[in-house]
Image (cartoon, rainbow, N blue to C red):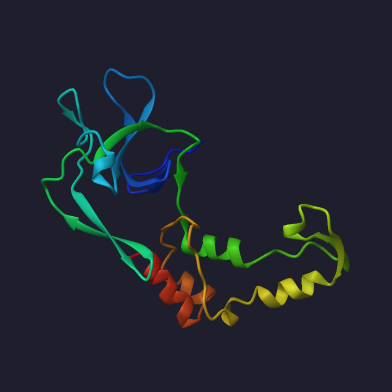
Length: 186
């Protein structure tokens, strides 16, 4: 399992935070992550263990809701205390994905092959209804045209990092797609 770098966003048991430290902590075993939580009440300290500072929690945040969607508004406050925790690196930590990775995994389904017929289970039937569909790859091809999307929703897709400059514009040139990207990262 690869270790995250400092600055990586994560989700652990529904709590979001930012990795501020990766490494060994004196008088302990293994590799630890120093996390600065978005919700300062989640933390237990400010990055100091046994008098040694491993990381600093400098940011607080306020969660506001606009049209039912939560937005995290960070603010600098050198007095934020106890907004951090040390946690062991584990498989239960979910690291965020990039905007384009989330967009492509949600809206683009890769062709399944040259077979002209496929069997499809209807989702609400719990496997009781199976139908034979013809030329689904042709439909997948039409739906995979990102330029035709007028709106996208990446709610609960765990978007946490930017793609390289210019990649979003080249992959998804529609203005709606770029404005959704900007709203997600606010």
